Length: 120
Image (tube, rainbow, N blue to C red; front, side):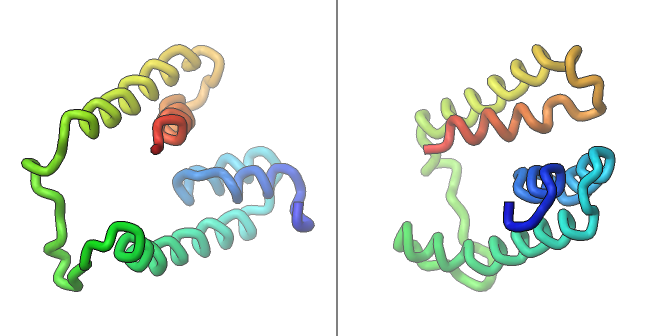
């Protein structure tokens, strides 16, 4: 893919922590520099683009003071149920695969997968 070897492409494209992906990618023969560069670029682009995307998609004005937030009164039951399902589902999947992963972070991939499935 795009001139990358398989481990580099996989761990560079995997959503997750920069340090974790570089470490796991290096253990599996990936290019540490490329994985870290791609993750850093992803983080940089998300941090720059997200405020504009939120403003355009929601129509909510965003202030530079950092005082924009959703109050507890505005959170509805459906949002809480989706959040709870994502957390509990990810924890259950992480527990069920823990014996097969023999790594320190079995919940990491399962929480990511659970959150991706439940996104609306």
